[in-house]
Length: 287
Length: 256
Image: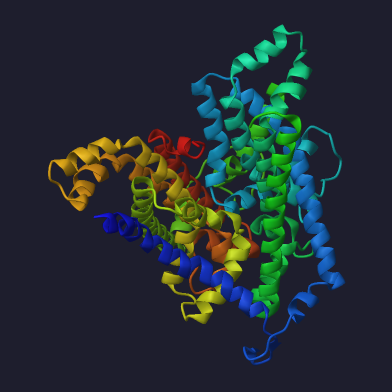
């Protein structure tokens, strides 16, 4: 009987574990192994092992792409940080019914595929697009602004595109707070700004940081938006990965790129989590 | 001030989706403002373009297969973890949510090299496998919450009264979880149906899902036909979101 109790859970869990081992662990190991072999005109030379593919990533051409990717990601995350808090604060103070409506309005576009949203942004931002037509119609500008096929276009589309990853955790954290907290701080003489800086922000900082970390990682690895709104000349990391893996078919180098991207994003997540823990411990606030 | 930020943000978040819907109804071939007339011309055009129809069929098939398999296996796993609480359960839960930590691009590259290695390149089964892995974290989260709402005492009662574990599962637990299972299915279906990045990386021109077909069409030219197809995708997605919301599925995203 005892024996069955020990074995039974594995019968339930095993099918999914097996599937994840084949469909998730194996592909990642495969790409790691491929990245450690040299590429030859005949394909991957599985007999030899090398770290050359990683050394090739240090090329200045790739450095420029990395800097652009980082620049776009940091700008988008910074804008999101400024906008997400006021929105989350506003939504968390509405009636429960209004809250769920607003959250639904923010979530639904996330569940529509990115390519469709990229098409929408193209229609809005291109030279004879909706934004330029309106701005010229009300005489704000004389000649059309160049709003896409540059980094501006990518940033404009990414801010709302990845907004939900910060809004949602922040909204959950804010609605979990006891409303009496702000009220208590107020009766003790704290101004609204002090309530924000000394009560609300410290108590929701872990969720805020967690959301910003996810947002940043998503910005670093997004593909369709920079491809369609940034154009081929403003290449970012994911577009380089596409180029190497599907156009030049250099899989060892493409594999090295994937491993490097994964290592980088995992490090960001890890540091972000540690940062959140550190902040909480330092302030003495409980999560 | 805070209200203005909120309204602006809402407009910006909804704008691309709204504009695609709007433009798909223009009668002219170029999108020029102001749009005054209403026409279904481009929907007829889109529905008679075989490239989009095939891709739509593939997307439906893929999303259905991925969602059914994911929900079935995730339900078993979530049940095993929730009721037996095995040692190492926390590690397993972390394993099942690990795909969230791997970006779609990295997973797409891994899948591309993997399916080529085992000879599944340009095969539906390779795509199904990839999509399952991508939606498992969401299914697990949703089904965990569902199972917590089913009182374990009911299951004990059924077993004390002589049902086997399997009979109890089929007659008691599954019916009580029906709503949660439907929710998880719809959610997985929706995520698979809108998946773009991993799919672009791992398939060639021979096997394009609808979002990938729209993507490659758009890289070539932009006309109202592609807006009409996109608008249809938006409608399908939004209907599913509405049903999900009615079933309380979206709330599960934020349940701890």
